[in-house]
Length: 255
Image 1 (cartoon, rainbow, N blue to C red):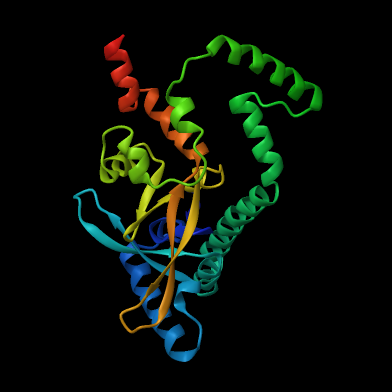
Image 2: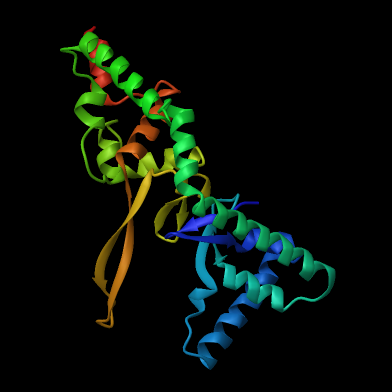
């Protein structure tokens, strides 16, 4: 059981909530539809504050409806329950959301530790100076070699998945499917979003995109883009299985 990340906020899948409260998913869906109808008819609040419409793919390959529950949505469901099951559900979702809050609040320290663990980046001034000296030696050894990291990985700015996929001779659909297969991203409606395990690692960012609804009202949609750190993550992930960018494949053939 884990929290998902939807456009920067933590949510729970209605299928997981159904298991937590011991109710069939179709029955929970029926209840949530009733809740959303009552909320929007009797108040000025949007039901999306509590329940976000979503979909999932069944084992048979069918696209079926579901909901993403925010913390307020979980509270709403919990308030409808009494007895032992209600108490157990409250304890579970409160623990999950509080754990995520603690992770976010300790973000800078956690990121520093993660960088040290993954990249060996020092946490002291002396260590940083020594690392700089060691790197200078390596740079001198590498000149004048220019490889994939030099030409691609150091480009600044955010990238679309289409741009990253082109390096491998793939389409965006192929790359998204590969990342989904590896448990990195999942489909939320028409859009791909990272699982919470990867949402706070600096791999992706949301870029606002303005548009107009069919009724002429303005709206804002957040497009998912990848940082250079995210591109490096994808590179290392695929490289473990021998999948390399086209430029590196050509280099091997020439060698």
